[in-house]
Image 1: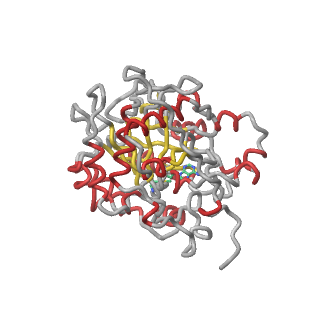
Image 2: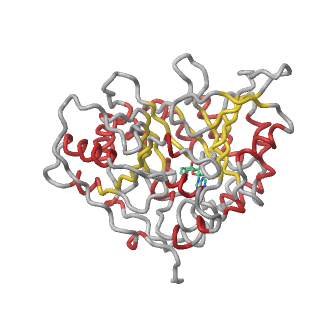
Image 3: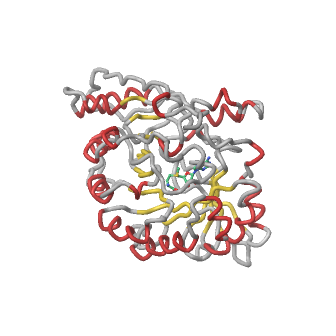
Length: 391
Ligand code: SAM
């Protein structure tokens, strides 16, 4: 076996032990962290495996047949995920996103979706239950996921040109199958809001210089007026295996400029507090936003950090609670849950306590670092991979 230069699962920094503080009084308001940020959004990674080998996420040279994926017994069971999610909801979470790895690779995922969809919120508002997928299995699964209670879905697609896309996913997967998955999601009604409008079906494209910048306009042309919102994501320095460097990042401002060459855009208001996406609407001939033409979004996690509003927690595949995508250590919720005595109230008070002490704002701090230190080995070598923590 070749020598590896990345931290493997067994060499990851040890998990942080979860404190179990005294339970707060029943009328204690939901926690905020040290920067006053509430807990609203939970991302749950249901598998660390993926059937794609995108070079910027799970490069083939690292994620090969010898890669030590988590054994099944280490994964949180659906019951454990639901139990944890219930406590997060009690503490303020209103949006749950299933992710991975590729979440649709997890067997019987519909059962988990159904369990999560049935979690009541304290104020009776419905949970927003969504999933991020590479779309490869979506044509087969869209209807059963919708029937199980999934509200909407975000599909990752990095280009429309088959050669570009096949090279990026690095498993020769064709664009047409992902487009079929998106069409199936639309047909199944994923992304329809309470008024029957298609507002929640999204496509995410990671933009990497020298790789798929020429796909920005074809993607914009394809999805403009389709009811599907296309969002462009800046290539991030997440994980330790993708060889990230700032030169590969195309700032979102340049993406918007690219699109403006062909389609006039007008800025739109954020649709929710803490939203990571800056929204731009397609304008009509009078220069006014035309909802029929739809909108695009940009997620500028590198050039315009949005830590200030970050209300997101992440539950890794093996049940560690991470407070930031760039964290190096997570809190071992699984041990607490598998321990004999922990009650639901203990788990909730532990999560609340951890959130209350949160001070993470990595992306803002990165923005103030010298350009070369953000990508040097010492600062990134211990970061966990996106496929494990959940993108
Ligand atoms: N397999 C699913 C998918 O493809 O959507 C879910 C997991 S994937 C890690 C989630 C998202 O993270 C994808 O849209 C992927 O393109 C994005 N992603 C992965 N590595 C990234 C990076 N270094 N910078 C920006 N986005 C990244």
